Amino acid sequence: MNEVEKHIETVRAYREAFGWDRVNGVGNSQKRFLHDLQNFCGLNQGKFEGSESDMIKNLGRIEVLGRINFYLNYPDDHLAELMKQVEQENEDE
Image 1 (cartoon, rainbow, N blue to C red):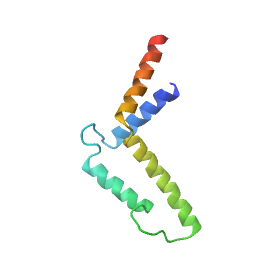
Image 2 (image 1 turned 45 degrees about the vertical axis):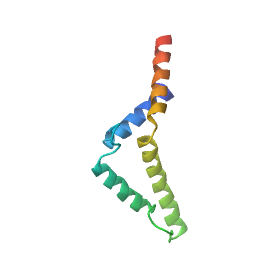
Image 3 (image 1 turned 135 degrees about the vertical axis):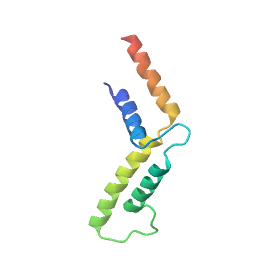
């Protein structure tokens, strides 16, 4: 499996895990989960208070949340382009 195929599979895995669908995005349960995760990461607070260690920990949490959001919100048109690319590569073999 090449890098493009791995990327497509990762987008699909995240969308499947979070119950994403083309029309509604994620479901209500998943939205509540993501909102709680945002609170846990400190994204919904006005000002960060804590030590450098706390800040580093929060940045790691935010990085994970960013990865989840990246794959859930990956544009369908980009995904379709990648899928066409894989199809063309398979035809050329």
